[in-house]
Length: 118
Image (cartoon, rainbow, N blue to C red):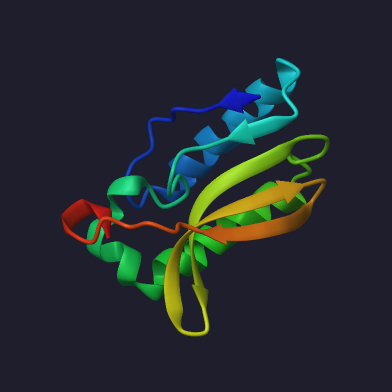
């Protein structure tokens, strides 16, 4: 098991992706079979109002696609935090990925609905 506390920045998709990929590589090197990243690690947790923008969701999916297509999830379950829109509703989700496949998208069940937390 590898838990990651990454230095993510709001809306820094390139930098955040690089840190996610580095953390996956480090987890694999240490022999982890499950890698748990921080909440909203792809767009950055403090994205605030940007969470409501479609571009944030689209860029998050682009980053997840790079993680999957790059073969980074081979042999390790990666639990990655990102926003997802389903049936017109935006969710703060966990994407569980293994061997290049999305196994599960799990929305956060309990939200603090003010300020930085929505």
